[in-house]
Length: 283
Length: 270
Image 1 (cartoon, rainbow over the protein chains, first blue to last red):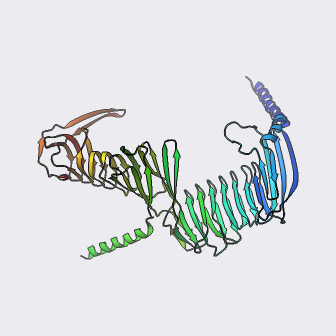
Image 2 (spheres, each protein chain N blue to C red; image 1 turned 90 degrees about the horizontal axis):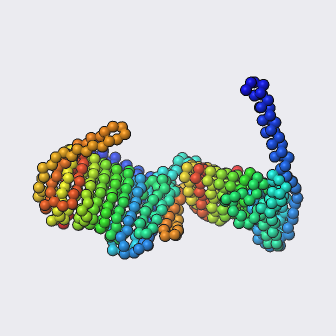
Image 3 (cartoon, helix red, strand yellow; image 1 turned 180 degrees about the vertical axis):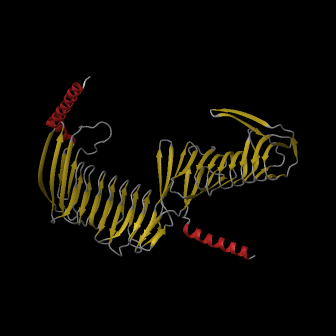
């Protein structure tokens, strides 16, 4: 094959690739929308749950008696047929009553194992929720997003898979988890409830006011523990578990490393495989 | 005299420092019911650095008392780095069909296990560093391995294979069972074998530097060096081993006793 033939073949291949790319993009169906919804709340202890898959979840304080949701949707699929299917598989469901608002992307109890029910579909949502400050908040996302919660007095639970979780001016947390992202908790005042915090690959930062009492039970594998605040070592009680699986019985003793701040207080169980734990003074 | 006093003071100081840094945690006690109560159990404990103690008792379950001596977890604070009394770790005990295994994760720095098990038990116990193995009152087959610590087995009925590279081995039998070969191997430790009076035994003794003493009258049997040849990919390995064969009470179970730098003592166990 001479040089001229080679050049022609290369040009033909590039044109073919460009055509295929163009076809792929041309066929992809995409829709974007922005809207806000408001829900009247009459209870003294409102609840907000947001279960997202792609995108951010932000929760901020708003006026009493109302939960508002600002939603940015960006839905796309490789074809019209799959786009319609994505509305079912990755549909947005909002359930509200006078006590609570529950927002869910995707089918409840959907299995993420095995075949992809809507290949190359994507339903990206950016949620900004404004809630009465005493709202009990559950916030969760999976990919390409963060979970950020600020100035909420109610109990908070939050989790992410491939992104960070940041909770500012927190009063009480129940559980905060991220598989591959960092977790940052900043307390407005001394914590008054136990909290469970876990990452696999992310650093964990807990900021508390000077003088705040708490016990930290740390279960770290590869990370360091650093504290800006004076701490005293404390022996935490071991956890003993029994599991029965078929014909075998397993008994596990799990012991955490304990440190006490300012005479102790609620217990923060902190667990990470590769992340550091930093205990810092609130700025 | 002065040097001796200084050494004693140094030992006391080091002990105090070690106690403060490696504070021991309250033991956790776990009772493990058996799948087949009343039948013999097999216990497998392999931990890198551990004091392993197994005691045979008249019981139908097993009890494990586990504590971890820690000192590696640290926290960096404004006043400097502090050691925590307790580091994080996990210990798992599994029972399946009367076989019990105990395992720890790598963070368990130094473990102390006291297992109380039915008297009829086969044991597979192994540790490497800063560890000790102690067995009491067991009827069964014992496989005991240590590298840098002693092995002690007292009140044993059954058979024993014991190996400690750098420390002593002491095995005292109540009764010798089985026709198989028992083996006791050390490089730098003494070996003490206790046999009940009247037990027939054939002792294969191999030691280079230490003394050999026996409470029993023995008949030393003339023996030829044993030559073994092994073809390997890298060539041929030829071993010539010369052992002393001594029969007690006319001979019986074969006990191989081998140590390079230690003494060998055969004594009466009752």
